[in-house]
Image (cartoon, rainbow, N blue to C red; front, top):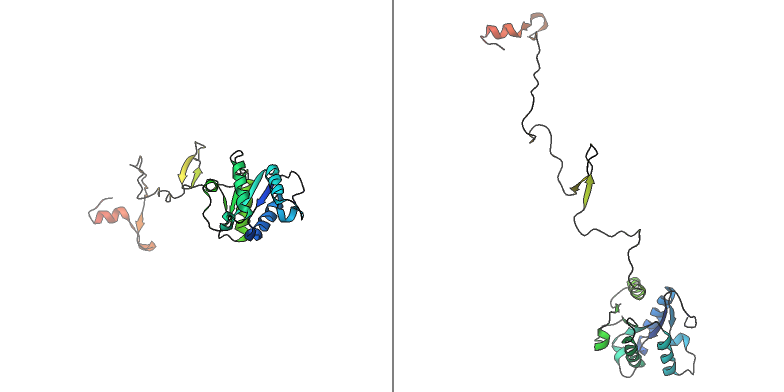
Length: 221
């Protein structure tokens, strides 16, 4: 993996303290699968190599160093401490060179604490891989097919029947007002009268004209 130059994701060097090597293997594997060229001593440095010499060469050729950070990483008895101190010196010259990957809760050194990190503590494997790959590849702008949810009230647009200018209508608005009786449509402009001449009431064989009936009662229509 470390013998191949270049790579679409860049070249990475994995720095780890001995007790955290299972994490280093997992991180190196996932980053290698996502397009990075990863140099990791267990896989790339043959027996008999000078550890310090290889480490210096790796730091000189890597685009970034991934530090597997836990309490072990700051133990003076591990090479991890020497590696991260060397990387911090280089990080002061190259912004973004050192990427801490936190795998256990710990108190980082003051210089390391200033750097943004990838936090894998408490994650399941799927979430840990997502955070790791996203953190190393970096953020991206949404694409044309990405849907960004609206953080405010959702609204819809309606158009007048006459083809006028569309007007916004809140999705939470109530139903439109009833236009018939009881509406606030204002005063009527006209009244329609229905006239029924020759109106008769009663059975068909003894029907009485309404006008005659009202007259017999002393009433008029």
